[in-house]
Length: 500
Image 1 (cartoon, helix red, strand yellow):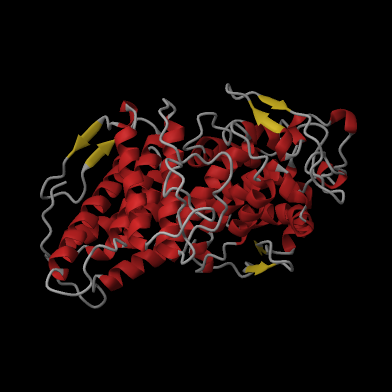
Image 2 (cartoon, helix red, strand yellow):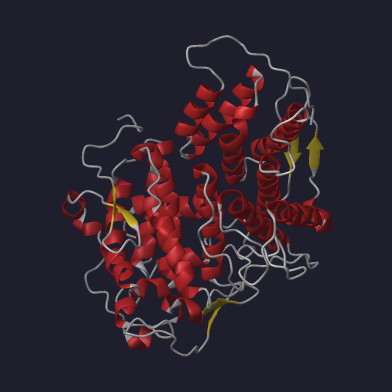
């Protein structure tokens, strides 16, 4: 079977009634074909077995060394869907005992593929690596989480190795049978294990673009709801905090690809826009991710403003409802100043272990980093600078200086894209480095006129799709059209000679 073809019984996403999410509707036949693989019917959780694994999100915490603990937070919810206690609806999602050992070697392989190959994509800026450690452990008593893991692993393998194309649909269908009622009622938004499952299913949703031809953003909308529902309880070192940071990066990806603002709430206590010294590289990386979100909001949102509170961070705040209104030029300057200050304040650990300039025959420099959070921090800083350069209000739009200013802007954009891609290409042990590079190519690849550069950019897109099942086909087509490749086999040797 052609892996890019759509199965006969593959049905598209559809919005559920209250608009909380748009969900993949997988084959009804999956229930009949895989009855034995479905979750056990009796999932009512015993009170005496209600361990910390299944507590709602605001009662779940991870200590600094990664161990789990719980707190006795008071009920903050109502109508049986309390966010301070375990409702019967949520308790029914859990098993009294873990399912280990798995009876299916195929499912064990999927589980291992997730923990070894896919979970590291999510733990980029988390020193506790909760998606590699906590999430797999909790999946033993949470069938929704376990089936989300199976679904993502199966879909990734179906795109990269010819694994059963329908397996992901079957596992996803099992997730939906439990998720849809809880998300419609709003009860599920208090459970951080379901938050984590939604994050995993969003990765699946991103991969499905190559089948569907469009990103319906159903799970992205659900992530917005999880953050909005539990913003007071997303505490540092918790699974919900880890899920939030992954969700924010997923939202940034969608914003870049669709030229829109970041819509997830980034005004929550764990978001740090300060530049206070710390040796924690993950903190610096998350600050850069937040700054990138602030910049995208500046570029694509008419309502973006910044407050006058000194030193509060990138912009200084993303919404700025409490501050005065600044001119576009002043808002741009504040964001640009913060980005430079972030770069100047970085600890020595962010210095690359190799930084080799490109030769005239090479499209990209060779830049090596030690950890994934360093990569993600630097790349999101570069993305932010790219958009600030493109949306610089100080560039003349008319007049005799317009052409020279535009040429300078284009050269700087090319320099930044080359570096972004060089980091992605030469740190391929961390695949999301390539994913982030693809974002830069999608947004700014049309600025390259040299055929050799275009070939190199296209190779990054095709490699990312081929090796990691990321949907870059539409971007490939857009770039080839913008470069004039359609019906043109001539080599266009544009003038670009910045050997960065």
